[in-house]
Image (tube, one colour):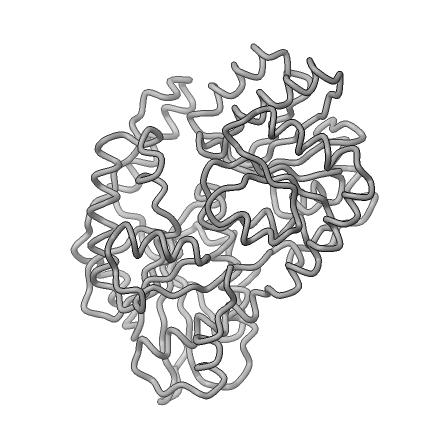
Length: 419
């Protein structure tokens, strides 16, 4: 392990996840690692990303500078739970495994042995500790859509989130909407919750040539034009509402818009496949499953529009990715999305399939609108970068550790973008 300069600050960032499992949270971890790795002011600060043993390949390409990966052993409980989920998926008994309940963990000697002056819990899981902590719960979806969680999962999340928020020196979210929500739901002091917006990761992935993009099209037998929906098959992502919209468009206007869906397939995937068959959308909807980063970039390059029909988001990374890629967007008018899109998307009510269909039709057929959305999207996303996000996190780490902040760091914290 590298020797830290006397004035350096060691921060431990909990990144113990499996490639492809947590979707957008994984992208946030990668973005933070990439941004912190590029900080070059010679402060002597050190950032240790704690990962599972033999499961850090997804993060390695983004680690450099003052960042290091420290691999920790997988606990027996987590290993048994993972094997159980794999068995359920392999045997086709999807839906029989209840949603896992979080629990309040009282200690974690492996992480604490790293002797960080600050621990950043970025994955919603955490543990109780005397070390100053930053806790990042991402969202409180279980309170807004309890029907998507088992009673045990709802109770477990509430207990864990409240315990970890209570102990945290700072709670961080990625949008003003998320900040207002967690303050209201958990009665937290507003000054304890800080907003640190994310940014698109797309520019950090290897560029994709036209030939390479066409190779991805051939690999998955994709149509010449399609709308792209990147999301795991969680119920709140609202694939079902999108399918109803596609069927309505076809039946009422004759317009058939192919949709390509990428993202890890979980237990709910079988429900989606059945509904697509019932609506005669088998040839119109393409499920690719989890795809590597280079293929994600190719899909943005190939698609004609991005659609985000989600019922709930704490922060939508695909929105910024679409803006970077120069693709017009139709997305839900819920939670943080109206403010995050900032006039660069056609908004719709995700509970109304006709509204979804009409919005998708507009971004598919109206060339003048498409051009305006693309131009506005580039303006919006130009305000965001993982370099700036990493600087904001570093300023909060130093504040939490009781370090004196520079004028620039104070400005970053006080002048955080409103999203």
